[in-house]
Image (cartoon, rainbow, N blue to C red):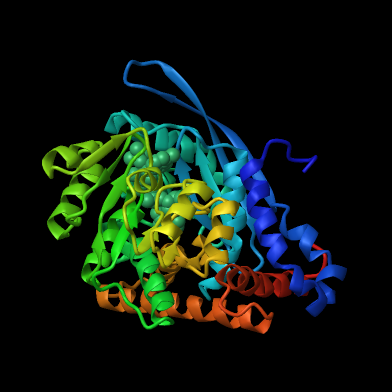
Length: 440
Ligand code: NDP
């Protein structure tokens, strides 16, 4: 900690993982001897760079760019790029660290990394977004490659931004190669990649519910966020017969107790992805509750709204202990994390103490990166699989991740504990690979 002062999110993620890895110490003395626990918390390298670009007024703006290449023991570094004003080294390190275990769980050969910038896409013109993406890639290109490091999207980075970055990479490298995932179909993207994280969260939650003889039918589902993950989680909840009742963005929360049906979900997609508007517009159009300045979990607690299933899909630490307790008190049975580390450690404890089916992000939201892995495979094979084929593979991967978590938890005497299961299952594979390389 002395070496990383102020890196709260990174310390939070490391603490959570390391505490649950304790049982592996006795079982694998070779990991201790090989310094694996010390090595795995240290990134292979962290690159921080200047991103100068010119805004629409002709003024030079300077942002900071990051790429943390955390661990490539089982495959090339892989993880998203986040554009959000809150981005700093701590957040990128926490995300990169989590990504190691998540990618390992997918069963695909991908290491862990993450990148981003403190650039705020809100209110920027399309031209500004393009110039920023190009400026970002002007430095990033020298650190990435299809066999080295393959970035993808995250908060603030979707198909449009990936297109601008990929176009610029292609231009300066003179190489049309699978160096980014989340690409448009026309230039090597995969069907189902946009849907994958949201669909995957719901598939994972369905697996958890099935253990108690339950499913999504007629369940009331609270979703936070209104971006890529939230939109497709809502779409899949609808397909599975549940009723999604909430969305939020960084300005406000909307609760629609009638349910965000297929048409309303399409409206949100158009609102957020095309018009880049605010969710408050939804509330005016569909006469629903709109609370400014509060997130979904605050509003649910304050208004005493009953929820069966919670899918936090916005950002880290959005769901605190007070709100977790309110969910439990109101009968919530299942929490599956679409976002990365959305529940605070205190909230997680409340879920676990109350026997809630709790699926941590690194397992529940791994469908996105898994499908990115499938995009890499298709790029290498120079083939495109059908929608059904990719969706089937995604479903199978989510089932396999769910099983790996349960198997690892049981093997270490923590039956049904998805946190322990995800961390141990993800870790052991990476640790064994690291050990096999010697001290490097
Ligand atoms: P998007 O940028 O598409 O959407 C993020 C959404 O969350 C937006 O609606 C945004 O609001 C809202 N949001 C962001 N910060 C806050 C905040 N502080 N308070 C309230 N709302 C907020 O991102 P994604 O949907 O891609 O990512 C969401 C989460 O899922 C992140 O934690 C990400 O790391 C995780 N994730 C994403 C994957 C993917 O494939 N995209 C894969 C695995 C995990 P606004 O519109 O105001 O910005």
